[in-house]
Length: 457
Ligand SMILES: Cc1cc2nc3c(=O)[nH]c(=O)nc-3n(C[C@H](O)[C@H](O)[C@H](O)COP(=O)(O)OP(=O)(O)OC[C@H]3O[C@@H](n4cnc5c(N)ncnc54)[C@H](O)[C@@H]3O)c2cc1C
Image (tube, rainbow, N blue to C red; front, side, top):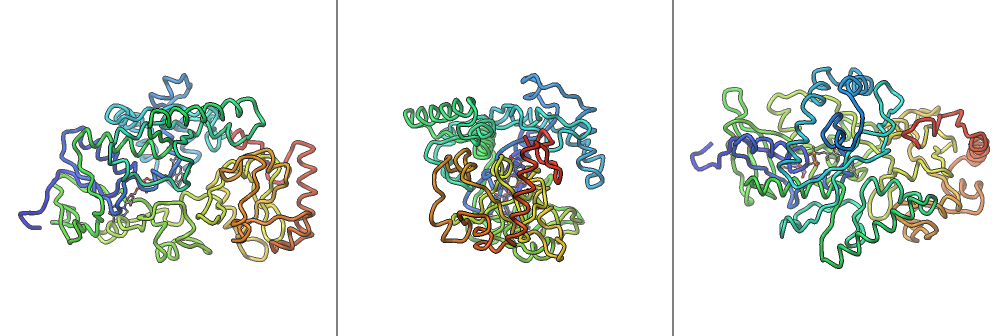
């Protein structure tokens, strides 16, 4: 370290929700803080995300009239996290989560709303809630950030100009015209888009709204966010982390931290070597919808300073289709009636409507011939296509030719022909469809219990 090095009480590396929330918390205690961000954009994967926040017993849920208790939430968390997360950490989330959210609500212009009916992922588990505990940021006019809005990491799926959809909207929009609420929600979203255009607003939602709101909070608190400033290592002094090494203005630099350094540099989804080392095969750095800057730098810096790591083999997984613009993360597409997910043998291997992380765990499970169920294929018929939104396309709209050309989607007039094109065992697929159709008639999936959980529905 040198006398001219910039110095703060707290240095935060990474400008996702974790880093920006921590920086807000430190600033609210009167500490001087800087956020350093590797890329030219703030927001990280948070800005690409749904922005849903799961913090039981928070003030937003209370105000929405959601009945919950610390005991219920604690049994649920213990059931879900099991032995993977220590009881102390589980308690920390429950004890401090609500205060964290209140801090964000008071220090940043983010308004949150409950997402009614977005069930907990295991609503039938002890303490689980079918009505859900998820809250999300309300749509926000990005103009509050001025020119800095251009530095917001873009969403991974570009939406038509001015279109802002919430998770609460998505639940109904995905149903096409199958429910009166869907038609009403489509009208509401179109109205919001028209107002946005007429008033020249830049309305944003989901993780975009969360990231922009947090960034606006930092601006009000006077916390600088230095873009294009990657952390390259930690500086230690007598066993204590006393600063960070970084590249600043294209030059190696040291930033001193009087009180502490917070590493919030996201995951390692874009680091081929780490993915190969820690995760199951097949895998690749293009198998992600996460942020381009997330190459595990902070994890490596921590390890270099002697930190332990845990749960490196697991992730926020989601079944995705490799469309031409990049992977498309399937959510409602898997759950809606009229589709099945099969492996190369043409067999189902999971409840299609299962939580996305569980669905990918099942994809990596070994099949009888010792191969994982990868690639898996989502099979649906024209009736399904005519009814529901698929990968952002309205019902009935033909899938783009380029998706066919890229081999991401196939179509055929019969199951046997389809199986042949895709390379699935045709007899297996035929038998699976016959069996699944009998479940559909009976209203009960005897193989995987699809639809049994409130989450599926
Ligand atoms: C499509 C999608 C939808 C999702 N939906 C939800 C949801 O609704 N609810 C939910 O809870 N989770 C959701 N997730 C997961 C969630 O987005 C992430 O777990 C969360 O955003 C991680 O936040 P973070 O702040 O830790 O990291 P990030 O938001 O990824 O931020 C990390 C930042 O650190 C920066 N960085 C990396 N290396 C360095 C370095 N060396 N120096 C400085 N900066 C560095 C990165 O560029 C990035 O800006 C979703 C994820 C995706 C991709």
